[in-house]
Length: 233
Image (cartoon, rainbow, N blue to C red):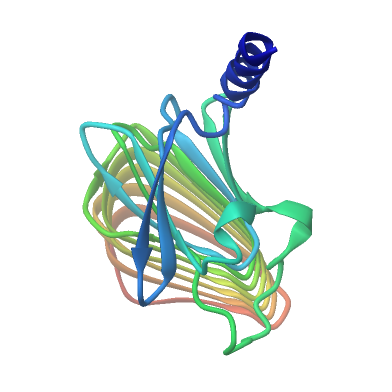
C-alpha cells in the first residue's frame, strides 16, 4: 500500500507542473512569505486583480511571489500559450479597497524577452529596467497603473479603457498607436521616434513629449491630447 500511495503522490505532483514545478518558501517579516515559482517559456504577462508586478528583462526566467502567509497559497501563476497569468483563486483581490489589514502581494518576474502586459483591475505593473524588444503591447482595463522606464522597440501599442494610468518615461520606436477610452491618462516621452497615432474617447488625457517624425490625433469627448512638449520634425 505504501508503494501505491507514493506512486499516486508522485503522479499528482507531476500533473501540477504547469503551475509550480517546485516551491521554495521563506519567511519575510514584512510580507509574510516568499515563494519561488519555477516557470518558464513566457513572453507576455496577464495580471488580474489588485496585486503588483515588478518586471526586469534578464537572461533567464524567474517568478517570485511575496504575500501574506494566509494568502500566498491563493496566488496563481500559470504559463499557457507563452503568457504568464497572475491571479487570485476564487476572484479574491479583484479590486483594491485599501484594506490596511492585508499586506501587499508582489510578484517579481524576469524573462529574456517581453512582448506585452495585459492588466485587468486595480493592480500595478512596473518595468524596473530598460526593455529591448520587437513589439510591445500595453493593455490596461480598470484603475491600475502600468509604468515603463526605457523602451526600445519597432512598434508599441497602448490601449487603456477605464481610469488607470500608463506611463512610459522614454521610448524609441518606429511606430506608436495610442488608444484611450474613459478617464485615464497616458503619458509618454519619445526619443527620435517615427509615427505616432493617438486617439481619445472620453474625458481622459494623453500627454506626449520628446521628438517624433509624424503625429496624428483624434479626440472625441472632453479629453485632451497634450503635445506642448512634443517636437514633430
